[in-house]
Amino acid sequence: MVRYCPYFVYLINLFNFAAQKFYINLNTNTVDTQSYKTISANSATVNKEWVVVDATDQVLGRFAAKIAVLLRGKHKTNFTPHVDCGDNVIVLNAGKVRLTGNKMTQKQYVRHTGYPSGQRFTTPKELLERKPLAVLRHAVKGMLPKNRLGAQLLKNLYLYEGDEHPHQAQQPKQINLND
Image (cartoon, rainbow, N blue to C red; front, side, top):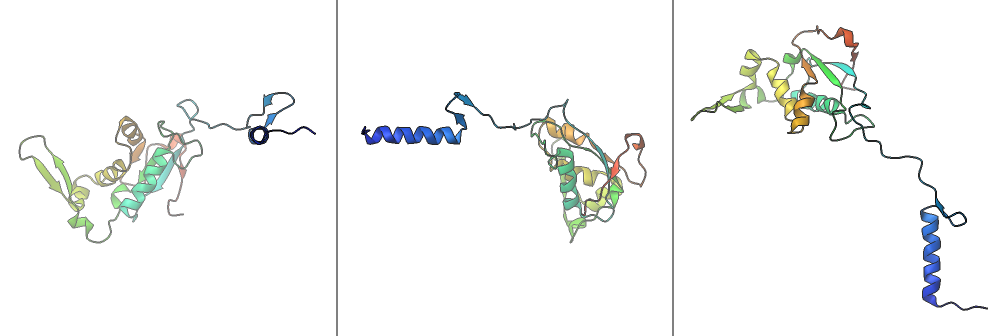
């Protein structure tokens, strides 16, 4: 009987374990690779769809978060962070979103004209009267990346005040975000 040093036995067991773990066939010296790979989407392989959602009586922040997920493409299996793989979202009745509590009068949007003492404040109530679509666009923009990709994603958002939209040729599918 041949006696091996304990360290040599340890190395043999380690090699056998590694062979099992990485599927190394000891007879042929080949490695069986796994049958799947991580798929990264690019502009050629991305599948963009058109969807229509209705904003009537939806809470502004929750609704904007769901739209941002659709625009970003995070609901898709081939989501890639640096690629525009989201859908084109058409929002009908965008001016009919609601805010909870006293946010309609107490929340303030701040902007600056660029001149000294040029800081201007406005409430959602005033903004809905002047520009009904700006409140929802501002909320969605705040939930997208702050870079060129975010600007590109925001161009996939189409807001309309009424029930009609000019995108019938794209055959958008109606979805309910409350489900």
